[in-house]
Image 1 (cartoon, rainbow, N blue to C red):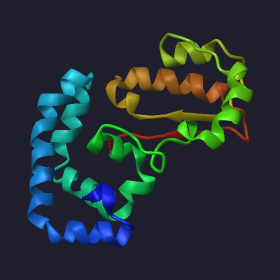
Image 2: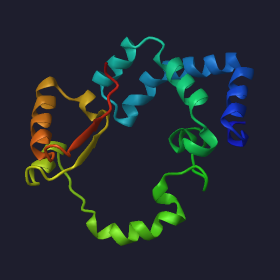
Image 3: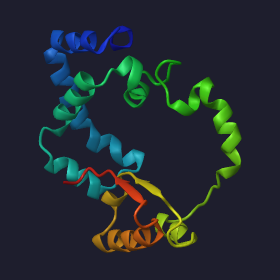
Image 4: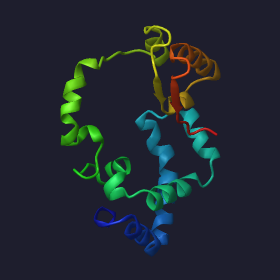
Length: 170
């Protein structure tokens, strides 16, 4: 039904219509994550963060289902729920209007393998203007986090360099 909602208000109305089902879905996900996550490579340290965050799944689902229009602008959750994207709900790089830009800049992409800070060390200091770091630091020891950040700080351009760090931790 979320696929066919024509607006965020219509999607919210669906959630309001089925509060017990939404609560059950949250409990199912919360209970199932410790069973599923290790198979997806989520380490015990990050699962411990989940265990400490009582009720986080219900709060997160409220933000997702009431705050984002899944059928049109939340391709991340659309992909989880339906196992595919649509032309209206997909990452920008999959939209035909962006193909020419991707082709024009494909030669600027290089693939590197290694630990993130080791790869960053291979670039000159002040090379990057932006770094987007997801939750991988939740998996590291405090010593590893300090080591990574000391490298990243040297590699970001002073004044212009920005870092975005997302973490499950508080």
